[in-house]
Amino acid sequence: MARPTKNATAICLVLSVLAVIGIAIGLATSTPLVIVFALIPTVVYEIYRVEGESTKWSSWGMGAVLVALLSLHAVRRLLEPGGMARTGGS
Image (tube, rainbow, N blue to C red; front, side, top):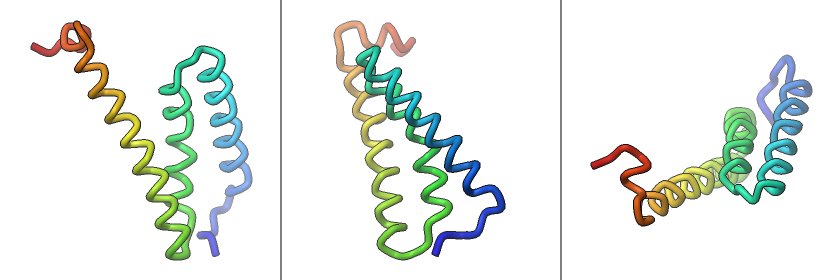
């Protein structure tokens, strides 16, 4: 059973709306990174809220996928020609 949260319904509704808006913007602008950032709050709340062993592992798995996507995006940006110049690195 999920951890009791006084305002769980409101929190889930707000995070779902945020995720849907982020997905719509990401698809409209062809920017997957917007989708990833929009999903982060939802995944973090899910990691906090779920309890059973398998659901906890799946929540952490989704979090790991989002971190991997952000990491791969950062590596790709660094490896692009002029990538270091854009990030201010030397």
